Length: 97
Ligand SMILES: [Zn+2]
Image (cartoon, rainbow, N blue to C red; front, side, top):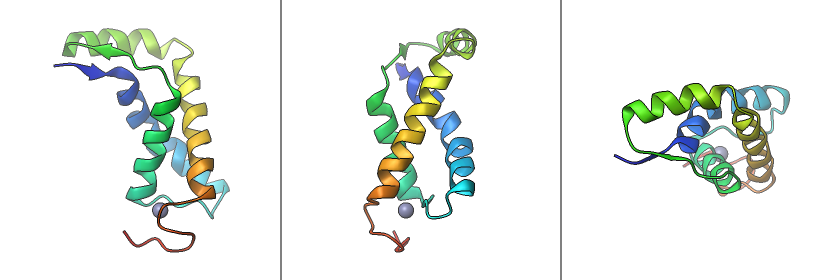
């Protein structure tokens, strides 16, 4: 099975980064639709990193925990949150899906 490791890191960091950002910026929407938009926008800014096995994921996870990738992912998520907050797909103030 091929997985994009960058995607795993984004999924890992999406909730903590988004929630922390939303705490300081209450106008930011954290509904599932905006979350998805944020994840997609963040992934488009990041280089993919494909791994082929569970073992590969574990090894790469350890390696990348020490790499600057984590900071890069956090920066990409924050960027994406700002973009989505500026023009949410469902319109401002309307959080219905
Ligand atoms: Zn939303």
